[in-house]
Length: 435
Ligand code: NAD
Image (cartoon, rainbow, N blue to C red; front, side, top):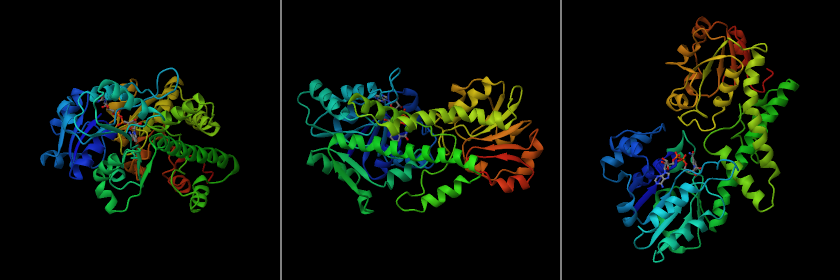
C-alpha cells in the first residue's frame, strides 16, 4: 500500500518507518525543512533506539521517502496519516488543534481516488468530525473516509510498541476503510494482535481514557510513597505486593518525581477540559493533574531539605534530564521544575543526560552541561538522580565519592538500595523508602 504521513515527529517518523518495514511504500512529510534535510542526509532528528537502522534499511530499499511537499505522496496514497502535534492550547488547557486542521486543509485538495485519512495524533472527541468537515468543504468531490487510529507507543520503546502493540484501535463506520487499515497492519495480525473497531468518537476517547488512567496509577503510587515515608514503610514492596494482583498489574507503579513527557500532562488536561465543556467533571483526573504538578515542584524542596534547608552556593549534580530514559524528549520533564526550583534557591547546577542535552540547553541556559556522569559529579555537594538511564544504575561508587565534595545522593528513581548505599558510606535518600 501507499502511505503518506503528515508530521514526522516521534509518532509520525516511527509509524512511517515501521509501515515501510512492513513492506508499504511510505512518504513522511514535515513542514520543518531542517528535519527533512537531515533525514534525506541519512540522519535521524530524534533519539529513539533502533529507529536509525529501520530508516536506513527502508530508505535504501526505496520504500521510505521524506519530503516537505505533500502533493505527490498524498495524491498516490491509499492512506494519509495525520501525526502532527496536539500541544496544550495557551491559556485554557484544551488541546490545540491548529496543526491537525491545517494538515486536513492541506491534504484535502490533493486527495485522489478512495483515500483513508487517519488521525493518529491524540485528539479530543469530535476532531474526526471536524477533519471530515474541513476536507469535504475544501474538496466536495473527495472520496474519503476519515478514521481515528490513536497511537499508544512509548518513546524509548517505540519500535517494539509499534510492531507489537497490545491492540490496534480503529474508529470508523466505513467497512472499506477498515479493510485498508487491516491491510496496513497485516503483519501484526499474524501475531494475533487484537484489533478493536469502534465508532470514531469512541476511539478518540479510548486514547485519552487510557493515558489518564495510567497517570492516575502513577500519581496514586506517588502519594502512597509519601505515606510510606511517614509510616516507615517501603513503597517498592507495597507496589510489588499490589502489582502481583492480576486485577492491578505491576506496571506504572514506580514511585518517582511525578510524570512528565509529551503526553500525560497535556492529555490529562485536555480530557479534563473536554469533560468540563459537557458538564461532566472528571474529579479524579483533575486531582491527578493538581497533585502531579505540585509534586514536580516539591521535588526541588526535597533536595533542599536533604541539604539541610539551604542550597545557596551549593553545587547540585543532576543525572538525567529527559522525562524518561531512552529518549531526548524534554517536554514537561520533571528535571525542568527541579532545576528551576534549585536555581531559584541559589544552587549551581551541573547536569548530564545521554541524549537530551541539546534540547535541555534550549530550555535551561544557566546549567553547566557535562561530558558524562562523573564530570557532572565533580565537586558536587549532592548527586540527584532524576532519570533512570541504565548507565546511572551501576555508577562506580568509589569514583563518585572521590569526585564529589560530599558522599550525598538523592535518588528520585529508587535505582539503588538504601542499605547498600549506606554501607558504601553514602548519605542516601530516595522516594518512599524508609528502609
Ligand atoms: P512532534 O512534535 O514530535 O511532531 C509533530 C511534527 O509535525 C513536527 O515535526 C511538526 O513540524 C510537524 N507538523 C506540524 N504541522 C504540520 C503540517 N501541516 N505538515 C507537515 N508537518 C507538520 O509530535 P509527536 O510527539 O510525534 O506527537 C504527535 C501526536 O501523537 C500528538 O498528538 C501526540 O499526543 C500523539 N502521541 C505522541 C506520543 C509520543 O510518545 N510522542 C505517543 C502517542 C501519541
